[in-house]
Length: 311
Length: 249
Ligand SMILES: Cc1cc2nc3c(=O)[nH]c(=O)nc-3n(C[C@H](O)[C@H](O)[C@H](O)COP(=O)(O)OP(=O)(O)OC[C@H]3O[C@@H](n4cnc5c(N)ncnc54)[C@H](O)[C@@H]3O)c2cc1C
Image 1 (cartoon, rainbow over the protein chains, first blue to last red):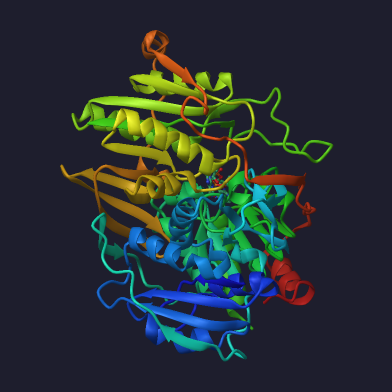
Image 2: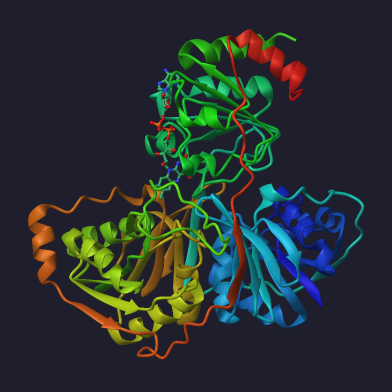
């Protein structure tokens, strides 16, 4: 049987975490992608070109960028008969949708899959990634969310999937999308960036947080933050890296003025190289850092930004 | 309007957990247990709704071992009115907990149910959405703001690109994110008062729910540990290492 992935798209193509989900499950069967919401059709050709995809199902809903999750869940449940596995990237949208689908199918979802052993057996982190559980499900149908940071994304080209149009999920009597706010940034996306620079409580204000932005821009990096920095209003909520924020695994992660609480480490300790800048040489972040720099960030970060600006 | 909230018993967030030597799970004997932090936020929100006059009664539910009554007492001390303990010693998966809650909700008929978005032990992030599905109710997940509007609630949600606002028809399921509120500490007089509040105890069988897990844990392992690297003496040395050794920039 085939595999259905409810993918995230931006109206031009698939999100990188969605391509990671394709890569994670490609070994288990032919992959079908479901695209929903406004501009789904416009994203379909790029989705069809993703390596390993057999079909792209387009449920375009011109009326809304964010269709009611209650209606999307009902639609996915209606399609479930054709599929052995139904999955989504563990994005905000995937996490919102998939457990509802699972419950309606009487399936225990397996969240944040970080390893695929076989069609029934998966590895997932528990306790903020301080343990890895290998679980085998007895459910006939599998409902999964995929942790993108654990899989390389499927190549964006090389596929030639067929594109089918299906009916949109439509409005729901239960909920209405009112709007969204968020700063559209020119910087790379946090979950797929090659370099991430994150700031913590030590920055002290949103004005000072621009030190992090400047360093990130010099490197072409995404900007992240600790929970403390987000709670204090120095950085927006979608910048939070950690157990309960975004999970990242860039080639280079630079943690500035972040102590390295377990909950923060959970979101970044799979990075290839970690740099820590902290004035406390005992800070736990140094236990995971490849390169540690002890000192005052307000002196070191501008110096680093200036040094990197030189070739 | 009745509000129902949850209080899962979990290993405290400050505890550095240890994987059992036989790889069957995580050591939970003799470690500090607490209310799941996201559930604390749910309880706090319900108490604030009651203080504002938007809620009349707060019922707190915990499913777990007999000792989970401690977490219910914490919620009662924060301001919940009565507790329900669904007592069960084995693993309770989110689907089972959602079914237990659905059975309780059928009897209690709350106008709003607030749960933590995820439990910090199994990190599943599933129970609230599952419950909404089973009941056929609206869901407002990862909430950083809740505004009651009579027949509906307007929920601001933390999502990947920032914030999203959704209006959900009541009764509804809401799950909490970190920025919704800062939970209070229970005062001593309220801890005393909480001792007199009632906790009803029942079992999954009483609620007609089969608690058998669907997932078999084959093994639990420590993740590969990173070893600490080197301390560099200057910004210049750091740049040299990143360019020459790591070759990441
Ligand atoms: C349920 C729950 C979920 C959580 N989820 C997350 C999560 O997803 N992500 C997350 O990050 N946290 C999370 N946390 C919070 C986590 O426990 C820590 O509180 C948080 O990560 C601390 O942030 P911080 O390192 O910025 O602040 P602090 O721990 O206060 O560290 C600040 C650091 O800055 C250093 N410093 C201060 N001044 C300077 C200076 N001038 N120059 C250089 N260094 C300086 C200090 O030495 C210190 O190490 C969660 C907590 C709970 C309870």
